Image 1: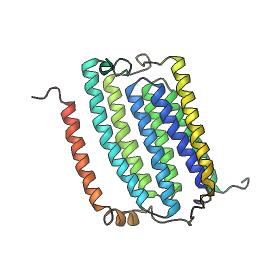
Image 2 (image 1 turned 180 degrees about the vertical axis):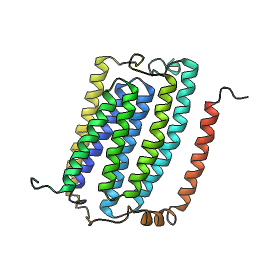
Image 3 (image 1 turned 30 degrees about the vertical axis):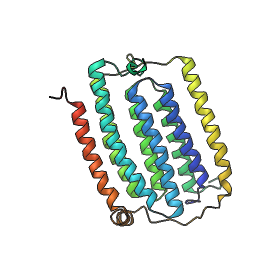
Image 4 (image 1 turned 90 degrees about the vertical axis):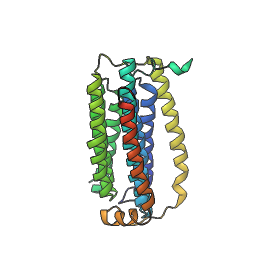
Length: 103
Length: 170
C-alpha cells in the first residue's frame, strides 16, 4: 500500500498506458505519432519505477527515472533531427513510403 | 466519501484522465491535437508522481517533457506543416488487428499480475526519499559516475543532432 493505494493498481495503470502506446505504434503511420507513442511507453515504465521506489523506500528507482528522462531527451533530439532530414529528402514521413531498405 | 480517502479519489481521477488522454493521443487525427493530448497525459503522470511523494521527479517531468520535448515535437510538426488532410491512415483491418494484439498483450500482462498479489511486499508509511534533499544526496554519492556519463550522452546527442540536421557535410 502506498498512501492507501495498492501497488496492484499502479501495475494495472502502467500496463494499460504501455499498451496504449504499443497499439499506437502499430496502428499509426505518421512517424511523429509513433515517436510520441514511444514516449508514452517510456512514461508508463517510469511511473512503475517510481511507485516501486516509493513502496520499498529506496531512492535508486527515482534516480533511475531521472536517467531515463535524460536518455529520452537525447533520443528525441536525435530522432527528430533524423525525421526532419528524412522529410527534407523524401518530402514525407509516412512509414509505408519509407520502405527503401525492404528490397 | 463512499469509504474512500481523498488520496484514493485523486488516484482514480488522475488514472482515468491519463488513460483517456493517452487514448486520445492515439485516436485523434490531427497530429497537433495528439501532441496537446500527450502534454495533458504528462501532466496527469506528474500528478501521480506527486501522489507518490516524488516531488522532485514531478517538477523535472513537467519541465523536461511538457516544457522541452513536447515543444520540440510541436516545432517539428509546424515545420512540416502536418494537419488532418496530409495525415496518412492505416486501413481498418490493420487498426483492428493492432487493437486485438494490444488487447491480448493486456490480457497476458494482467494475467501475470494476478500472481503478484501474494508477493507480500514490504510497505512503509509516507516516505521522504522523493524530496530534492534526499534524492540529491543519493545522486551525488552513489550515482555520481552515471550522472557524469549522462552529461557526455547529452553532449553526444547535441553534436549528433547538429550533424544530422545540417544541409550537407563538407
